[in-house]
Image (cartoon, rainbow, N blue to C red; front, side, top):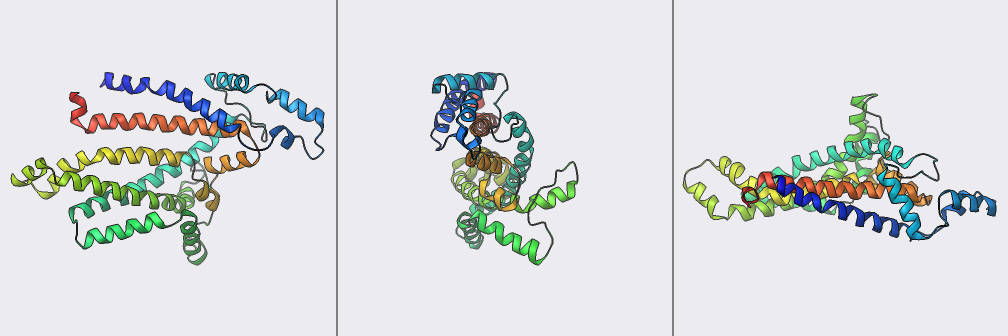
Length: 314
């Protein structure tokens, strides 16, 4: 297992370096000049020049990348031009919000999508299969912003059960925190559950038609034992891959959902930074997201190793 882990780990460093170069280069394509945007309405040339010198905006692109990446290696992601705060502190303050939303959404997606996929595959061609596919199609085709608005109208405006928007830290009031987060988490989990259902169903159908499953059934094993011990374990590899990718996407910030429910996570932070030409914040958030994606893929590879006996023998 150590050899397997080291081989995967060896690909992370060059991948992160390449990702940082792409992030910094693409950032420069954003229209507008942050120095002019921050100089105020008077656009004083002296103020503009001071801002450019302070944030190295007048340096060549490779030099600016060198300043930035050297700071990143020291744990310094720069300073927000608009908020005058370290980017690292902004990320630390917003990440728990996005992490909680992502965990709750993924839990909802797994609780709905995986059982539905198993039932659909086991009852292939029957009523349960058609019902599960219709539900999955609904989840795939429903826009998140529309579903969020409809849920607000139902549960907040009509019934008054849940708050329409806002965020309460769990350290202040855990119950109010869960009440505020359940609607956005369900909106995000709904669409992911549909994708999880389709992938689980496809993987289970492939496994159910294999020879070792027919042999297990011929030996008289209980259907539940065949499905859980033999089928689900071998069908879990593509589901793990999808789960890692979707969880990484959730951690990058759900822009529309966070805007609809006024959740102060990565998505809202990113939107505000792009509109205000706050380069350091955009670069820091995207780099953090890219690194998270890479680490989640590493964890998915380790999960393959634990789930699939063939990898342990290779």
